[in-house]
Image 1 (spheres, rainbow, N blue to C red):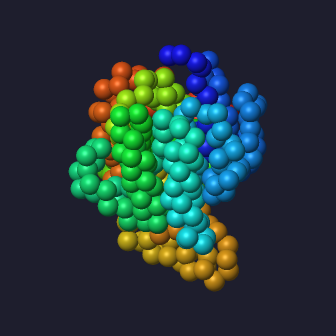
Image 2 (image 1 turned 120 degrees about the vertical axis):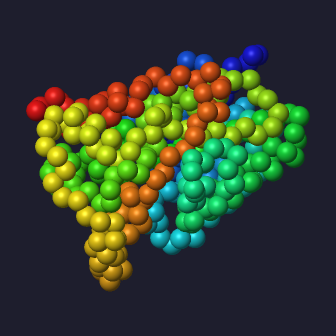
Length: 329
């Protein structure tokens, strides 16, 4: 490679960016572009910029040779719902238009397995996309924008689409954290029979994979990779691992049939609608919890990537960081 790369990390001040920045630093210069300054030690220039602002984005990307596009709205309670399209789709249109104008040849776009929607079996990268929710739909449409950008100058441009499953790790307050917190606090209630398999992705492993892709030569075409740490565990296996890591020897205290769990969650949804408050329980989250969401990641392994941490190590590290010494039992 000739001159050192200058990579723009769009949305790079967020959860994945915190782990990605130190992995990119040894081999490329960086520019972190986000709507909020990083909460982690700043080791790269920061540009306060919204990808929805095209003129500002053009200025932020000036001089960059590649883009890692992490910027998105992704919570399942975003309002108004048009924000999904405003940021995830139209923001990506701005990114690709700016890349075209500035002669940038590589875009690594972080999408989501939500683009698959409910599926039978275990989806791989060739499974047709059928998103069910607004977030998955916006990412699916954004993927098409990235593909079109690459195809418009096929020999010179390289695009990579990465579809991570649910990402967890220190500092994230998503589903995995909430599950561990409920178990640690003795508040956990099991919904369903627990035989549904769950793919997960540890943030340090996801960041390592993105850095691995960024270090590969630019190749014409669009490559697509699912990212999930293997093996996918059943919910019962995951719970057992969490209990063991926390030092808990007890069994699950309460189990509810899925129908009962959904009915209770519906009451929370009604209250949220009536009061404008948000709650950690909703029908969407209960159904997600009880659903099988396992994905194939064979293509990721074909790149030669080896995850730095096993799933068990990742959970132990996360629990230790968030809940103290896990060997308390």
